Amino acid sequence: MPFLGQDWRSPGECWVKSEDGWKSSQFYRQGEEEEESSGHRGKQLCNRLQEESNENKFVEDCEVIVKKRKKDRFNMNTQSEYFYREKWIHVHKGSTRERHGYCTLGEAFNRLDFSSAILDMRRFNYVVKLLQLIANSQLTSLSGVAQKNYFNILEKIVWKVIEDQQNPRLIKTLLQDLGSAICILIREVGRCVLVGNINIWVYRMETILNWQHQLNNLKITRSMSNGVTLSDLPLHMQRSILYRFSDGLDIISLGQVTSTLHMLSEDRHLWKKLCQYHFAEKQLHRYPILTENSCVDWKLMYFTLQKYCPKKEQYGDVLHFCRHCSILFWKS
Image (cartoon, rainbow, N blue to C red; front, top):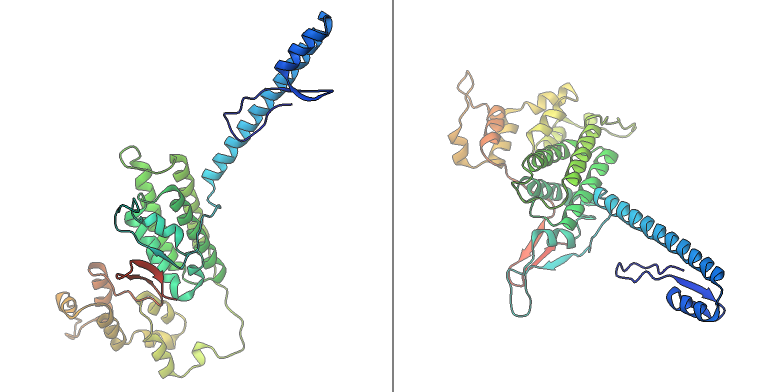
């Protein structure tokens, strides 16, 4: 009977069943030589042990192959999760006598509950923006486990968007930035620090391309509802809804639904309020865009300022940091 175990340092000895129980083949061989003087029986025993040894070697080789395949599948597939699902963590800024090391971005990403945060409508845009910032600048600083969690959360976001048919443009921008970052890493392999095998990153790049293909082919189904729709509302209520939008592309998309919404989306005062919301007064005077009648074209001015100046960002719920106790936490 072979000694099978997870420890690779095991002796791997062969055991033989006898009348007194299981014995090591070495001691069993010595006992047989002392008790049996027949050379023919000793030859049969040696042949038997040799067959068992070959069988044990075959079993061990199969185990090594199976373990290697499982390890490769685990490295290539990012389905495994390693979440603590904590609501808050203590951020260590440096090493002390009691604790060596500090809290890294990967550790915070592993321990905080981002998996359930994407299911909250108030936190969804914030998590997507955080993933986009990591993709643009901090992707190589993540550990191997943090990278797995990153792509696990990204996969959940993609499937949520495909299922709910909401915020597809936001995820397309994230995948585009992430794909560009991974292309640069693969192209400059050897000249930059890359955690993980190059084949894993190639597999991730193929997965991103597959997600982009699914999002590009996403067809939003029209809901069949007999209730009150947006077009049934009075004009002043439709105008008030448009004033609640913070993205100019959303206003243009909504204006393509009906002719009434198109007329409301071209309101000059609407785009003026949008520019004043996102940009400071100095920025508005820096890039003045006038029409033929010497009036400010606020719609064109909004998209011009968007190229040169960052827009104002506002989220329903964000991560908070307490400077007194050095705690990073979700507000709720």
